[in-house]
Image 1 (cartoon, rainbow, N blue to C red):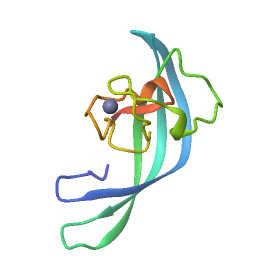
Image 2 (image 1 turned 60 degrees about the horizontal axis):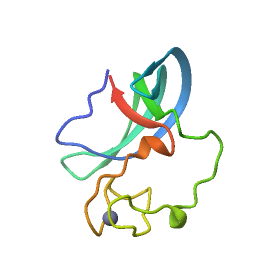
Image 3 (image 1 turned 180 degrees about the vertical axis):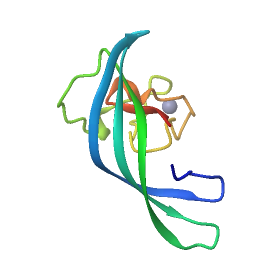
Length: 114
Ligand SMILES: [Zn+2]
C-alpha cells in the first residue's frame, strides 16, 4: 500500500469504489467499515503533485442524531459555545471561541484509514 507520509500533504481525495464490510453502533454513533479504492492527490516534499492509487479500509462515523440526506446550510448552524454561525468546512472548531465542533453530528466523518 502506498503510504501517506509526513513528507506529503494530502490535497484531494477521490473515492473510486466502496464496498461496505461492517456496520455497528458505538457510543451513540453509527460506525461503518468499508473497503475503498481511493485516488489520493498529494504534494510531495519536492512540491510535485502526485496521484496515488490506494486500496484501503475506511472507518466512518456519524452521530445517531445526524439525519441522512439533509442539506445543512452552514450559515444556519450556530456554535454551542458562543452562538456565532459556524462553517462545517472549517477546522472543526469555532473561529471565534475555539469551541470544538463535532462534525459527526452533521454527516459522516472519517475516523480511521488503514
Ligand atoms: Zn464559538
